[in-house]
Length: 403
Ligand SMILES: Cc1ncc(COP(=O)(O)O)c(C=O)c1O
Image (cartoon, rainbow, N blue to C red; front, side):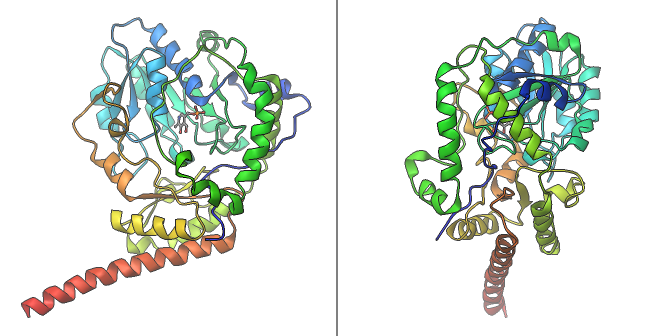
């Protein structure tokens, strides 16, 4: 292996916007932003407002059972018990029937996640939330919309992350947006920012940009102690804090730059995936109505493969050659959490389990070329062929034995 692509994340453009605060104030249209030190803290802030708005004993929030453990860390920090709900079949969306079953008079928030950047069904979820007098919190940590998509935000609160691996990154930071002045005014106000962050960030940006280059990233991947790409539960700690003015200036520059990003790579991957539809490969974005470049940017390109064996074989081949493939979350959320954490669950999460076994995500960042997409297409054809030939061999064996 000569090189290895990272699975997600653009480079940080280290250029400061000349008037970041004005730019950030106008960027989100009618929604006002409050910035925090991470997406997890931003989500916790929104959840805390939901909890304080309805003073109930044992407050609960509904979250998807397949997703980032930071959802649980945020809920815990906000003093809320997470209640996990399965995903819908073959869609990265909440199972609405289960959501309805789980809403009760202790539920204060419903959290919908734009997994891989694929929008949740905002209007529907918001209606469900309002019917139960709870807040719909839209976790858009994995997506950053182009200007034309901003209309699609539907949450009472929308949460963004600017952490590593996100479409727009400054290696840490998050925001909560709201167009409801009353709700916005209830958000906890960050008490400054970690001082160490102010001087260490520029160094981090430079080393991250240097190390994410495919020729160097392969060395990082080869270091097991870095545990790159692994999913772990990390409790959120510390006081409410924000991001430094310098980081905000760089953030504004990166957000401005992203508005001109190209959807070409997404288009290439959609075209490649379409060739395998008849062989049981589900292009998740296309199945959710995102056709090629038509509906905006994803952070990773998700495919559901016909079986866990095909998924594992494809991942192994991708990561032995060009890198950039990821299985995302290795199990449903309750299985990732330490035993004493953990929220309420319905028994079993068949769809979340299925996602954790059959999903592969392909990279979409600026290191992806048409050559790489074609190479991944050839690997996919190869693993599907060899999977069929295993089945054929077994079938031949059975035929041999039984006439
Ligand atoms: C859906 C989702 N929500 C929240 C977060 C937390 O964001 P951060 O890493 O900025 O704390 C993540 C991080 O990956 C995420 O994927």
